[in-house]
Amino acid sequence: MFKSIGVSIYIIVAWYAIGICTADTEGRELRKKRIIDRDDKRISPSTIPHAILLMKDVLINADYWDNEPKIFSAEYAFDGILGIPPPLTADAVKEAGGAFEIVECSNGLKKTFTRAPQLPLLVATFGHPSKFGDGLPVVFSWPVLPSSVQATDFIVTLNTGQTVIPDAISIYPNSDYNERNTVVLVSPDLGNRLRPDEEGAEYPVEIRIAKDDTPLMLVGPKGQVSGVGLTYDTRYHPYVNGPQLIIAKLSVFKNKGDDGPGSYGINKNSGKSIYRRNVEYRLRILTNWGISPDGLLFIRPDQYEDYFYIQVELQNGDVLNLTTANYVYLL
Image (cartoon, rainbow, N blue to C red; front, side, top):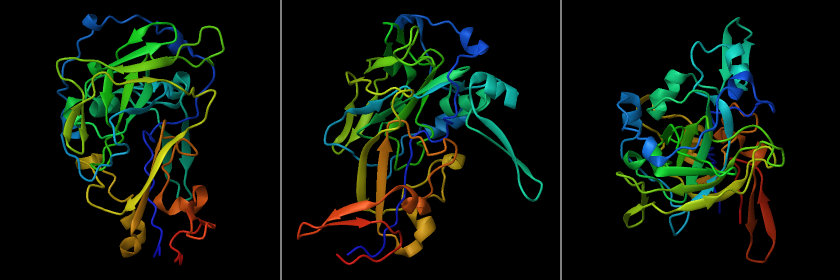
């Protein structure tokens, strides 16, 4: 019997906006594509305090999504909207191709909505700068060892044959201690906004974990395992395919670890925050881009009925759809 269904949805890299234009702007045209030789790009460890705090090796109740270490997805996601040089204005964001909206509330207060972060914010969370960066989330089956994550761990091959090493990398926004199996690569050279069947289109076709002085490590059931040698051939393109569900997992709810370091932890988005003592189970999902329906706001734990239902096969073969949250189902 399910006493109640408490659903906590975890969306990867949900801080970005999907309201992007189909044409390159002047700023994008000025950014020339380049072939990057690995020996020409040495990225030193970050000295940014916030980034160091974020990348400390803390994992609490983080999930294993497969029996083997692998890359679940690594698809091109966002183009040119990460690391906007200040000041962050509507014109600057829109020229980069991002979404920007100022909403006036009934009490007269105004609030700005955008998922195009300023360059200082990007540096604070990723440890290194990248102006007008593209975003590429890489989703692993096991959580990463945060301190081992370096930009030089990743080589991205484009459809043109060019290879790119990202400017910056972080586990943000997957900062909660019970997440951390996704990293986000940032560079202005990961692709453009043309469809793959259009002349001049550039997009990733392969992501490979390379060996460097500090190899990327994954944390498995028996301890740390090197991620060197893992590869992924891209399957989807943002202008052809929508977000894809990778895997879902229903487990007994545990609240410990459902926050992150300092200001990075979103401490009131767990099932316990909504359902209190009634919550018994958590449904977690992984998507390849982690896009919320409107590209701006997170999916909240109390929105289960808006987007999901659980299908249960009974012993007699009948199928029951669990469509209502916080409702007692007798099975």
